[in-house]
Image 1 (cartoon, rainbow, N blue to C red):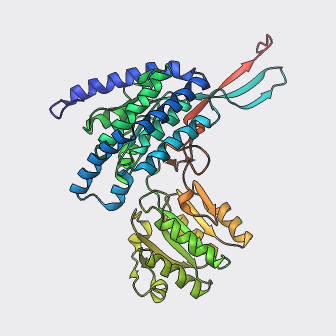
Image 2: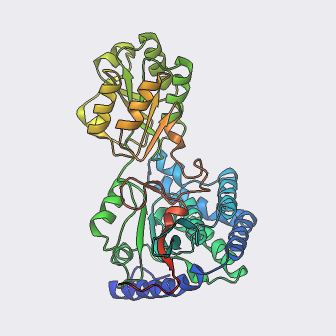
Image 3: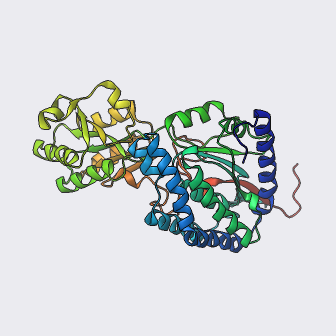
Length: 427
């Protein structure tokens, strides 16, 4: 690890070497057998489980530093590991190993009148750079997903999770080596200097093919502004949940509280609650009271404040705020039309949910709301690759090119065309 006295020139040299090694590792990885990749993944899971004490000890250092720096509780929650979360990491890696290998999958095939047989076949992207903040589990998720899709990866975790991420990364390296795959297939940048991020965003002399940022708005904004290679990202998770007058009252109450309060610091947490102005006011009052009882502060319009005296008056800023905390903005809207209009104006195109029994309302919501993930009668907290059966995700993409929604193994591939002929020439 370079110390703080190392110059930007030293960091540039280090990063160029990391890129060169990743590019070299990507070649054998792209043609590695499914069995070998799965063997590496299962060995990684075994190592993480066996070394959990080392990982928890390292995490304790990070959490202690975070508490001393007065880090927000929601960010400390993202950072903290325990036995249950380590079990989740292990299970996530094993789930990725159990997924079908996307590499070599024939996406489409067709015959031409001249006898040519054309196939569109999945291929690895190459080298992926992943930049993330507090969550040390991303180290394992990103490393495992990239490996399964045949890609080499360069990981740049946040300084607040430095010790935790390094301990997990050591287990990933052990898994690669035990399966006879190059250790350089999953590299972690060994310095916390931000100059290393700038070098990674530059593409490292053409060795990096894609950048995936996973973190707060400022991180993602910087990556999108400065990257010289394609980026899979979302800027923020400004997620909405609309409760229609046709909603089942008990269901709506359960879902709204879960969508906001299960984990407030994740990008799939609901940030704005939209209530149908035609719904039963007693049901609306119960939903708001449930949120308050769960410890959620409500910033609402006048109609909301009339039902929940402890609510505070919402300002326009509340409709554009990703709180990542126990706070929600709430207002009444004029049915599905009002909900769609509000979402169109304020959404970050991440995840939206509709709670309704009227199929016409659901159809309009699904047809007219243009976000990466839409849910009907389910919590926005399901906006997660693992919950989608992808094993895990490397992030949520809200753009419309290549990848959208949870970025799993299939989204970490490109494709090529394989054309089979019998001697055809073009006239």
